[in-house]
Length: 405
Image 1 (cartoon, one colour):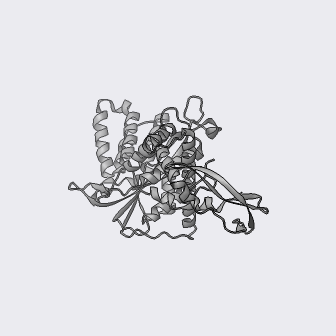
Image 2 (cartoon, rainbow, N blue to C red):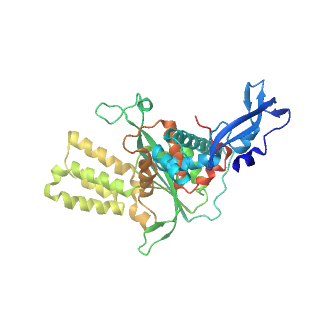
Image 3 (cartoon, rainbow, N blue to C red):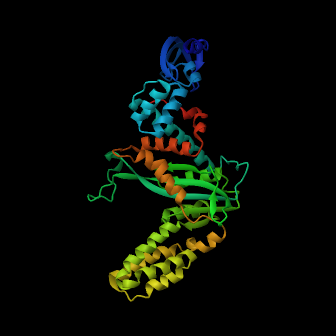
């Protein structure tokens, strides 16, 4: 039933048709094309045109059906992409077979999923670049939240050897096995609970991930935050783990935002400081650390610094202590935790850390996986769109459908 319906329009546009490059392509003949759909394979006969100037041929009907250069219908491609972003490609093909009765190989499903994700990533990057150039000004959400958060983190993704060649790593041989993916999670907050603790608005989290260097990531991050209303909310807050590149981007793109170092990372650094001084503290180590933890919760970085410098250290030990304290001194304005909590703000970056595990780790860091940057970018983009509740937006763009490689 589907085949005759699709074949009703054979795509004949007269003896000549615009090739898309300003030339007139000439009608050649009717040619068959077979492609897979959610109802199975169909074959249609459609008009084929050839452009002598460009040296290529095309069928207008293919573009109308969304199968130009592709062997899957848009509906099946969407289904394959959904399966490919959710689970490894071979099990994904099995899901499509079990749920829709369509037989695909894992390789074919993966090729299409990666390509569609890459096409979506290209659209997102183009929109971000336009926003940075002020040629595109995103409208704020119809209903603005009271508080908006930008949480930033990074995690490593295992790569094929060609993607890490020449890069330094943490392994015994000094070679890199992974590439860092930078992830931003933007979410809103409207209320606090009965105890005064902040509550993330349900369904408000949106994600964006990229292998791009910090500067490129910053453009994408800023565009996503502005799409969510960053330039219009009452309170804008940026959460991070203390890495310099995070705060450099925060200051460059949103100098008006409140910057907060994740409290739990700060506590880890405080415990490291306690281990460094353990040989001096002896049996008082636990009590000393408890006192410093209370000072950290109060945002009293000066007290922590004074307590650590009270020990007469010299040489290497003194240098190690000073290096550990530099983390607190540099980030002191971002560690006013009592003040932040008094104003009902989040002081932890758990949302983005959970994103690193759920959006990235649970799909791209499974045992035995090794990715190319382009393939991982495609799947990451699909997963971010799905986790952000923006899956359908990919397929509303013509460029959201990409032919298989």
